[in-house]
Image (tube, rainbow, N blue to C red; front, side, top):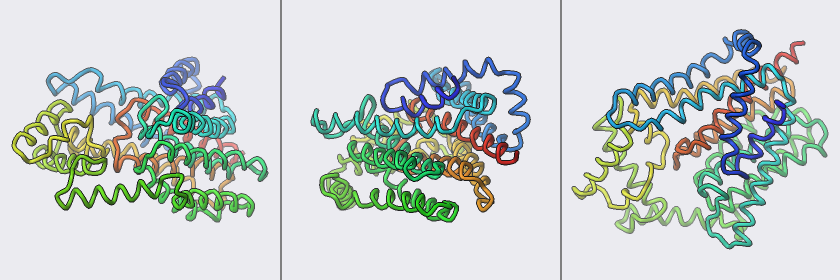
Length: 402
């Protein structure tokens, strides 16, 4: 049962509309049957997991405080932080039930392959310019790339080269899924991924495995030079948008809108630096800037500020930003600790820790040009995967110790 939950989360992420949400409830219900053993497991591993748990707890408490203090704040503002906190249920289930980590690897691989088939059909057969499955194209492309990079880390955990081919195929599928959507912002994650794989290349004790990973990364890079992928065209378009914005051209472009929103966000941050303002209030102030001629009217059309850091600085100020940053830094530090002594680490510890680092760096990269935490799907997938990977890392450490 636990293995099925672990498999279905990444597998259903992009192939269904509410698969992630259903998975979160399933983990929560399952954890209720494991309360006694789950509590004991958390107490035993508290020193290792406490900073991550406290970061997500602080994220919820800050949202609750803002909800209480701000007039007309909708109750919905508590949904994402509360459900991200309750995602600790995934950690409990993995620690107590100890499902096979291969269920996770196959779920990630099959999820990436299923996603590229879905969005590829939309792009080729339905001739959609920016397909996004059942969600928007940017979020689909980002999560597809994230699945692909985690699948590449999974290849380290397969002892036989012929078995590792499947996660490598999943890695390529994840990239193709991102390319089909026409999403550019997530490509920054490829740079961070390359740094991480190069940094820990020595821990890939099998030369065949290292060659497979290197070949996969080379293929990811080579797609830029293939005209049919459209990557080079999208990069050129981005450069043209930037040039037009700074030389008096149209602001109403993909990049131009973001630059104008960030300009407005900088103005709002200077006015409300410590605790920010609510979502409705900041939109009203942006509208006032437009009326005063300080911003282009195009900013009225956007749902958010297309940058995670600026979004939280505007709505939560420096205090909110510090708490949001902790939900990235604390998990990164957790997985980084498992790789400090990588010379003695097992193959499974390396794969799981590297997957965790890739997940965090992916979300940081996506947040540079998009608010990846805007949607419940994006937020829940991050929290559930963080806690699942933490549980698998701790299980791997226990089994290696025995």
